[in-house]
Image (cartoon, rainbow, N blue to C red; front, side, top):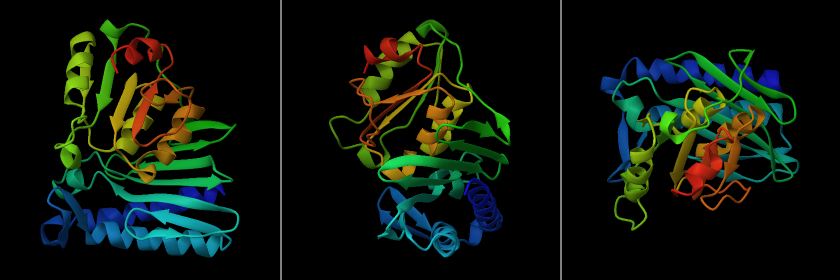
Length: 251
């Protein structure tokens, strides 16, 4: 299954790149005033859906653009282009994200960043890799040395809890901060030791599912903002473990 997933996500990434190369003529619509969808999102998800369901006809599907299809044995969870805003502005930090969930447990995940040509893969109980090389979390253990990563307002700007106050508290205590624009990729950066902490709120399962598998297999902790060991798209905190308690105090 891992090899089939890797091949599928790489081909999906190449399809996304073909749209990226003609972004100036791409059809772009608004789901809402701040939420974009392009013909690339729709086409890439259609490709992934057709490929995976033909390979695993007993599995269901949950995609950002096409919704849910029931299955007997599990389901694929897909974000065809995570970071659409970055994609349409010709930036590099966007990704294709695919996870496999069986009996309610995330067992396999892949996140591919086509413009960076980086493929992250995690398989439950077997490890995590970037471009076939094993990866692991950082060893940073001090807030003053920590590099952290998050996401902001966008669709959530009008909510009382929109992450700005939380970011300000954490930014004052940490060495440096990043905001790349793809939650799936951000979580992989924790797995790869590029950043020490990622948090965000009011996301969807398809934003984080694949990244969570990869991060956990690389040794990361994945909790909510209270430190509960669960996968909650409303409150996602991913750390290298050493930073967990220190960051929780600022949540």
